[in-house]
Image: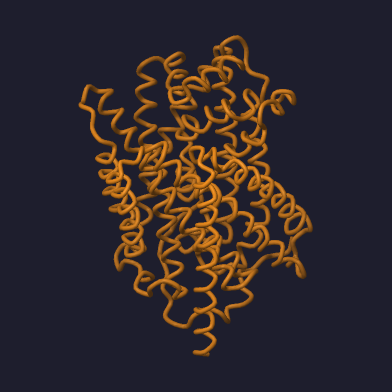
Length: 479
């Protein structure tokens, strides 16, 4: 492949004005920590995996992580090919803007912003009760969930205001701890040979195709939300043309291998049929029950604490991503211009971060005031919004890749910019169909709520496209 030079093709729709840019020196590892933490690996293992086993394709569910990883790696092939031609931070909306125009890009930006703020706010609905469990575990009183949400919110707001390196260090520690304890559990299960031999469901066509493969694929796909945020840290990365692609591939492979291997180990820990039965009957304690069986009470207590810190790491990661979306939009003068001024000392998007904190705080307060059930309602509703938005963003970016390279491959192979992105797009389209078809069940059995979520995202895109058109028209008038 020929040498690729970063050179955005068309900057005529960019608003004039001083450069407002974040500062940082992130390498591959810190960015990987950031985006893998957003995926909340321990949260997925403790929450999504039991759902996939119970409602999806049973003992074959671990294989759906392999399928999802392949689909997303196909997406990443085109995504990273376009990276050198996107000369601005902004992740998905910058990629879409580069290929499909400014209005479409801003429309996608609004969808992304709604999706990321929704998941940041929603995860507080899991973190709060998890904090309460820890206090009771050590003999403390029963406390309302929103107290723990409020405490985590204060810490998140502080870290979001500071330099990105501080957040990356915190996330590195938390992520390393949560992955380490689960790897220990996996190794103990495998070393003991599982309950009665290691599961073959991950490679058995009969097991993979059993039950509801569609539901299994749905739960697998939503477990990767956040991996794509590598590109939002472009301005804070060293040599982003190399760092962003490498971080994207490393994050995807790390997440995929971790999910597939751990879910397989958990199934092996009980046996195929028993694992599905336990996930169905006591999914909320499935991970803890497995841990107690294989690594004892102390191991279970450690996992309980790290589950809480995993959720906090997820919140902090999405807060950083959402803040940078706001910062990037204000750089384009789509949102108020002051939000695009980095902190003089920290080089952080401090005002954008505070703006996101305000929206999230309002969500938590409303959930507490209206006495929403934190997990079954607050988290589920917001997570449903993010799930649909996530796949829509991936599809839009895949289309952007195909359109950008349609006439000129810029020295890339057909596989890199046409075949792989097209195959990824097909897989993502199937995933979106499955998600929308089952969205009512995903958000608590309400079809009306499911369609309301779809309507919210459609409206977000429409509003963003209108704002983008007006912003572009103002730029044209000034020029």
